[in-house]
Image 1 (cartoon, rainbow, N blue to C red):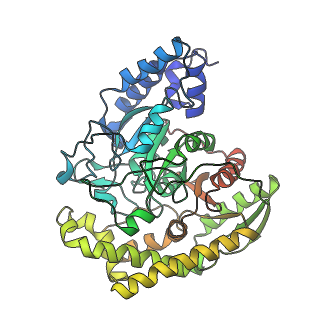
Image 2 (cartoon, rainbow, N blue to C red):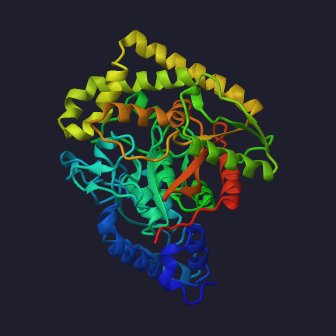
Image 3 (cartoon, rainbow, N blue to C red):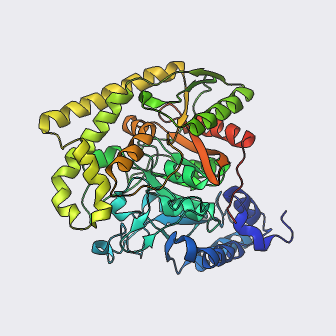
Length: 464
C-alpha cells in the first residue's frame, strides 16, 4: 500500500497508519521508530514532547505480535500519540507543568489513555502545557519551558494543549490527547493548522482528580478530554474509541448513533457583536461556501444567550478559583498567574448568591441553545476572532483581547455542546480555521460537516 515510504510514515494520518499496520504492510515498531526519530529531529526546536515513555517500542511490539497471531489489533493499531501533562499515564508523573507535582507518579492510566491503548494506539510521551493549564493562548511551563509553533510565523502554538497541537502539526505523532475547558484543544488546532474535537459534556470518560481530590463543580462541568489530529477522519476514529459510558466516570452516557438532522447551518461571524478580524471573516465565508457546495443551507444567525453563557462561565470559574487562589498562586510564576488574575480582576469572585445564580443562568443558556439547535443543527463560527498573535502576559489589554477572541469557545464549553476545529487556509504563514458546533451528543454531525470543509479547503500538514 505504501511501498518505499516507511521513512515518511511520520507524515501519515492516524487512519492510514492503522490500516497499514492492520494489513501487515508496515509494522507498529516501524511506525513508532519513525515517530521517535522525528521527535529527535525537531523537538529540540519546538519543545512539544516533555517526557518520552520508555515502553513505547515494547507496546508497538505487542501490537505486531497480536497481528502475527491473527488477533484483532484495534482501529488505531500502531498509532503514536502524545498525552497532555495533566492526564495520567501509569508509571509517569502527572506534573501539570509545575515543580510541585514533579513526583506525582500516576498509578493507572486515565480512562482515555486506557481506551486508546486498548484500540492499539501507542503513547509516546507527555506533551507540554502551561502551568496548571492557566494561560489562555500560550504553552510555557515552569518544568519544561516554552513550546514553539512549528509554522514559525508566530511563537505560540496556542494553549493550553499547545504541546499536542505542535507535536501533531510537526509530525512527531499522528494524534494528541489534550483537554478543552474553553478552547484548549481548538485554539492549538487553529494556531497549528490541524483539527481538534471538543466532545460534549459526558461523552468521554476522564479523571481530573489531583492528588486524589475530587474536582469541584466548574471543574466537573467544563474540562473535557479530546483529540487533536491532522485529519477529521482521524478525529472520527478516535471519538468512536473514546466515547461511551464508563464506570470510571459517572458523567458518561452511552454512545449511540443519532438520526439524520436537517442540513441547516447558522453562520455566526461575530459572536455577541464584539468585533471580528477581516481575515477571520473571510475564512468563515470560505467555509460557508464549502458547506453550501456540500448541500447545506447556510444562514447568518447567532445562537441565543451568548452573553449569559459567558457571564455564567466566568462567575463559576472565578468563584471556585478565588477560594483556592492563595494556595494555587504559590505554585505559579508572576507570568503564569497573569491569565487567572486578569480573569478575576475582570469578574471578581462571586458570593454564594451570585454563584447559585450563575448555575441557573448556565442551565437557561443550555435550554436556549438546545431550542436553537432544532432550527440550526450546526453552527459555523470562529475559533478565535483575531488572527493568531503572541500575547504579552503582562499586557492586560492584550490579555483581555485574547480572552474575548475565544468567546465562542467559552460559550460552547459553558453549554456543553460538541465542536470541531478545522483548518481552512494559511495567510502570511499563519494557519487559520473555523469551528463547527453541533447539538449535544451529536459529535457525528459536526465531524461530518468539518470533513466536508477539510475536503474542500485542504491545508498542508505536517509542517516539514
